[in-house]
Picture 1 (spheres, one colour):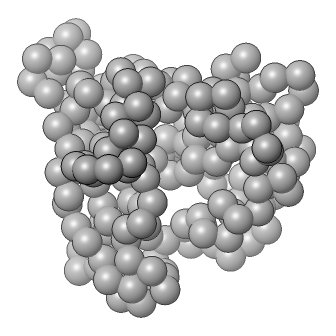
Picture 2 (cartoon, rainbow, N blue to C red):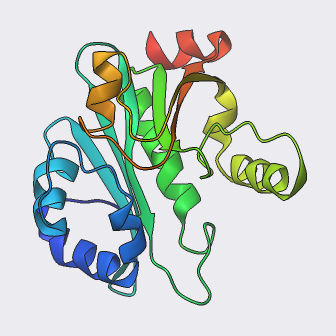
Length: 201
């Protein structure tokens, strides 16, 4: 079941992190070096955040967080993770439904711009792979999340390893930290044909 997550779901989040600790290690922890429990309560349940997950048989299979940017009508994908098992994949853990709900929430908030920071070598929404297996993966993910195709996606910035970006909003998105790997900022702008219907109605 798709569920808006609150402090009451902390234990389910901690179980997911114990199952897939690798995603926690590479996560952007904002301005905190705290434990997963503190990160969940202080960041993912922040007043300006919207965190949703898929719960099935008492387990949290996947989780995603939208964080509204206070300086402009935009949002960024703050966090995504899913349970890691021998049978799991994006579709089986309902990651596509979690992503779709984040987009729907952004429309409810009248936010027409999406920002996504990711490692250079990681797939993310709005990726622009053009060949090979990654192209097939990107296309299949985008087919499962129809809202992605409602946006035009461009590379806003490429951040080299162990360096800070030039602009304040980019440093904020990266948690005011540097990382030993490169980052890419993807910017998605809602296409004009949808703006009047979704943002100004």
